[in-house]
Length: 134
Image (cartoon, rainbow, N blue to C red):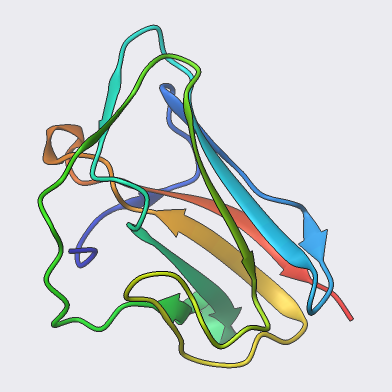
């Protein structure tokens, strides 16, 4: 579960890339890459969320999963240089798996968060910011 995970924008062993900006209806792509020389254990592709920056530095979920959802305990190992990749249209109502859109995506500052690092990585979440522009 995501609750109480520290959110960082840099990890020495993994990178998260997103476009700097997208327009409404444009395809959004996020990529997590294992930048280390060792294998990276993840909890799989579905452990992500998108948040919007609202007043006074507060982030609100725009795409997420209900708190009561029961996650599988599967792991996915990324070899050095391997990637997880997400492609979606943020204006869509249907998302793969347990995800749902919580609000309409309008112009503003957002961040894509991957929180599927194993508990051995102290439950860290990695974030990458982007803008939706009109």
